[in-house]
Length: 103
Image 1 (cartoon, rainbow, N blue to C red):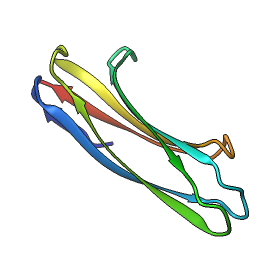
Image 2 (image 1 turned 60 degrees about the horizontal axis):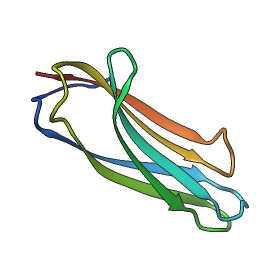
Image 3 (image 1 turned 90 degrees about the horizontal axis):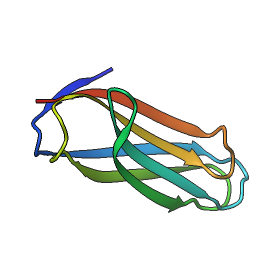
């Protein structure tokens, strides 16, 4: 797990790529979310996007770029949760949690 430190007032910028092996599935929507959660699990910042997959064989890739402002937050420990979830199959979920500290 990566640990990062940021100053209150900065903005957290992120870029992620997700890959999905869709087989012969029909076109569908993929939900992407980035949540900044306080140490006790409360979501304090959120960014969401929907992506449309392509129909057919093979796989799809989805990029997700966003910024989460850090101003107005209290110094402390936070978790950045990034997730991509297919609406075609609820088991197709990829996520990552990254611990960070605001000073």
